[in-house]
Image 1 (cartoon, rainbow, N blue to C red):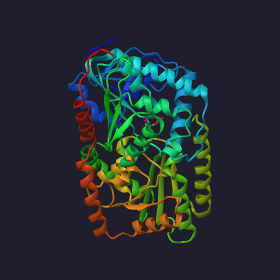
Image 2 (image 1 turned 30 degrees about the vertical axis):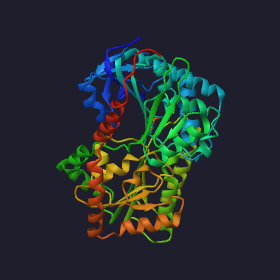
Image 3 (image 1 turned 60 degrees about the vertical axis):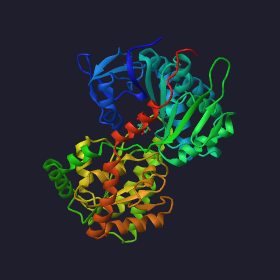
Image 4 (image 1 turned 180 degrees about the vertical axis):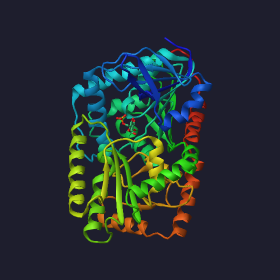
Length: 475
Ligand code: G6P
């Protein structure tokens, strides 16, 4: 089994939004995600293919071409969406890997479906990758794919990148299938993580739950039957954004005008605070709103001179914990607005929808204080987007130390979001920061984000992958 594509990306989702129009025709638009932007040049120059799910249940699509990429849809039926995507990926692994902020559920039938669906992704990748090609598997939904693919296609180089945290062994050890997951990942030649702490956690899990030896960042998989000894490289590759694109967009007349217009529509507050997140319990939205509500109640800030815009884009809405979170957030916002709003002016402008990227960049440019208060986050690209969107060197970033971005963005005001008093102080400090200090901090932050963009992230990872030894096609 082999195909003709030298470079193959395997991700839970395809990098396009697929819609069926009134005539029943399938149409697609490229989704603006950073990953596809980063990989587009590699995909186009190396005849790349992207294996992923369309996002809809019971949709069987033929492979198609989009923006110079060969897209290979992997179908999921309704039961698989419930058990593999909403269940094992997002109600078992997601909370387990994010510090058990909510309790993970362990169900054997979810696991079985996760195994089956991972096998389907591995087979789809095996069918399109060229002899000795490279396959790059993405994220926690597909942790078994590296090993499954290696069995099918021992000739290809396999990379894996984990976009979310890898938990400490004391939490990971709860997973009944922990050894299978570690072995699944070790099918790769290179395994990348966001933070050095994640890589260290993974290496500890290898030592605790397998017999493989580790030395520094290298795992040795001993010879087994007719499989030769091989090495797996573990590394840290913090993901980023297309910084130059965001920076250029933020400088346009259109965006600066829209930013001014947004401020005036919000009643020209002295201080505009902003939160932008998927509506997810990992993001610390409740903690942030609580802190803001207390500042208002204690008259440390006044409404409408200070306003908070919270954009919470809908996410994983079939999963119970996400439904609960939505109710909690909306009750909190309702209480604060009910107590402190006035005709035509709210304390919190809460939006439960997504916006086009241009509107987000205008919001970033409009906001004096950006609040990124995740309880745990692999990286958090919103923090990097805010920085890239401030070529004017204005604004202040309040950033959780539990977001991967904190490793690089030390010039932000770092907070522990569980410490509500500490967060309130940081919010006040950000709100009253002198322009000179804003500029000094923002200059350093921007240097980091503009130098380390998503293109260089992909290049660094793929350079390591290309250095791994090429194998014969014999198992
Ligand atoms: C996180 C994950 C991604 C995921 C995204 C959106 O960033 O790391 O793998 O695609 O959230 O979540 P969704 O469930 O809508 O794909």
